[in-house]
Length: 248
Image (cartoon, rainbow, N blue to C red; front, side, top):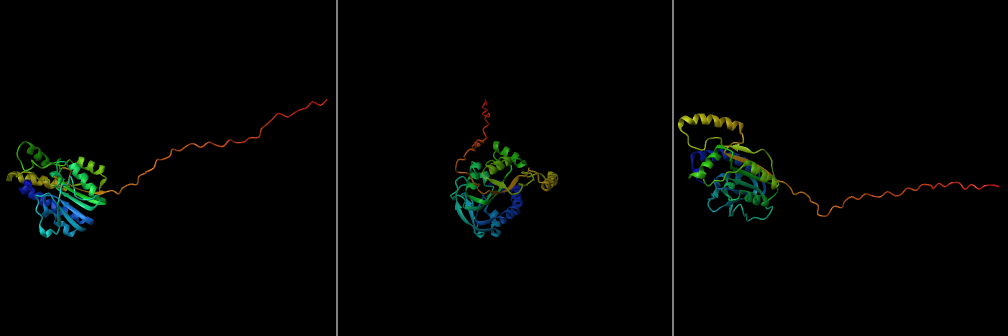
């Protein structure tokens, strides 16, 4: 991705790294899968509690050997993994690379076991960087090929897939997505510092963590409708007129 080689892209990746390391440390289980174009960002898996860590390569990324992660090739939209076979899945700027992010997220939800966790780090369309993305639609730009994620739509997708946020989403990257002149940097820097403290949902990147809920029990038989019971007829003594005989 070309944006990662720019100065503002490098700053953003550096700001994401400690949050990613913290997210990975909370993952545990047998299998963890990391998906994303930057294999060096996966260095936090060394302190992960998962027994086996895998790196999903799209054929363009290079995996460093010191990460100690086995690599397998595939696409998020058609993962070569069985159902409920993964305990943790990290999507680091990988949803933006897919033609159908919703289908990709559905595949990730399929392979994650109930109780497993999904971590998402993606560009936020409701940000100044999203405006830069609109510019990239009409002119060649480093964000021309990047598909930003709508947070509201993303949260709806997660809910439909049975994935519940375990904490509110976090937003990072409140700096400008351009290289500003020196006389503008101080003012923008103060604004970015204030926004970074308040952390409104307008940051360049959103970080979300969701847990797949356990499957609920379902009724397989037909439920019988309740029928009203007929009350037994009560017996009452039969009254009859006395047989009066005339005495003559």
